Image (cartoon, rainbow, N blue to C red; front, side, top):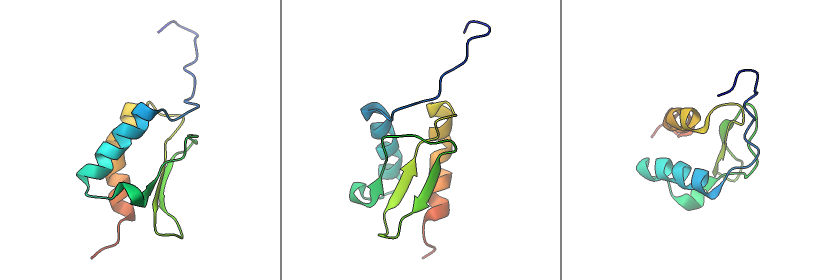
Length: 83
């Protein structure tokens, strides 16, 4: 990276990003029908339970995607009901 060049924030969640997120939810045995992934990232990103019961996963625009993805399972598990 060149000195003095700002790293741009992510402005769109791509199909490749969504695929990687769904791989995480698949590993956690969460139905793809129960997940919403907005195409616009936010800063900060968030994982939250919606009023319809679905899990909304908003990518963090300010973090490198792979770094954010590594923290995703923990964020999802924090939103899961204790059975």
